[in-house]
Length: 171
Length: 180
Image (tube, rainbow over all chains, first blue to last red; front, side):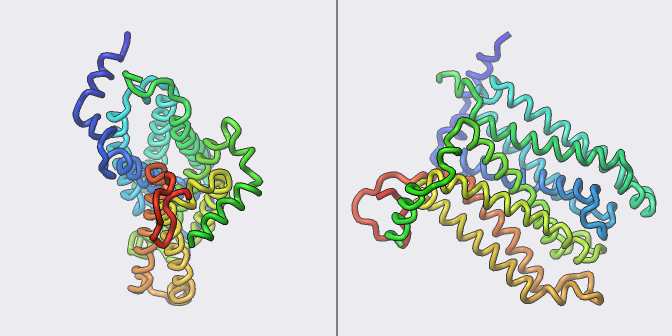
């Protein structure tokens, strides 16, 4: 099975050609910039939540960390949208590189961990339980794995620029 | 400023302690990964504090959220170190790059803004009887902080799209944006 005809079609669409070829700063450079800002909020708030679970800022009730979660989701959706646009721009570059699938897998794992952590600490139990949950070994383990996932996802994402074998169907 | 810029580029090229290391196969991408991780720590921890000043998680004492700040500073330190590795390896790509000039400008704004917070608002916001809602000037500082660090990201991410070329003709702008 080959993806090549699909990739060639995708690269021939006007959206793909605008993303890659336009001189507008809002095209490829702008999308890339939004992707970095979204990463800062999605991974950054995730990291703050993980650090809180691991004992940083103990005066902040774990349940109150939920107030920052909308910002995390804002970053996540900003990156989902900008990521899809970057993929439409260079589908061959991404989809022929195993590191890209590794990055997606790590992001999926990171978000699944986030949802599980959220359910544990924002699950609608009493504040006393939240404080207990803060020190539960299971939750600490999830927080550490989450930090490892996001660190790895970022590293994999950065390596995409160095590990691709084909840029487009033509090159 | 032009003379200073060219002097800086030439001095760095002549004395750079990290250029050989950074030109090995994986050093540059590894330093970049650290730069992105530092970015997330900075935005995540400083951003969380800024959002609290702006009124998110209003029930939590501001001083409690401030305990995230050391990790934001850790992110900043990681980024200064990894950033210097880039700058000391390819100085002309940064020192003549208008996007880098903007990045430095936003970093300066972010730094002065943070200093302003500690000089003007710190005691009022952190005293034991401080109200849970931050005063207006602290909120303004928090908003400036968020914008400044996002400006730093924009300036950094756009660096590659404003790579300086060779200078053609006389340069009259305050800062050189091409390699003489």
